[in-house]
Image (tube, rainbow, N blue to C red):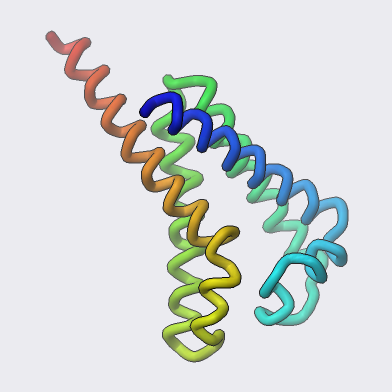
Length: 138
């Protein structure tokens, strides 16, 4: 199980960081090619680049946590908190009628799935952290 979690978080982290780099380097192209983004509002280069920076840090947190168990729980929890809040916000937009329910299907791979992977990975890191503490307290 540990190996699967490490592989998933490394892939997730690399994908998040790559998305962030894409957002920073080519915000107009990013806005036009990512499914559903144009339905959320007008193009705003500054905002896209701001969020791109965030994605680079989230990606770095997942990758660094995968490689460094001592920092894993903190880094994965921090990244997952943002990803989960982001996904919840998108569900709220559907619930309030801002976006149609089909929007959730379109954005599932890029919004909800990363949050789900993050939650699973963070719960794994929490369990590992607790086991390590219990071993040290014996």
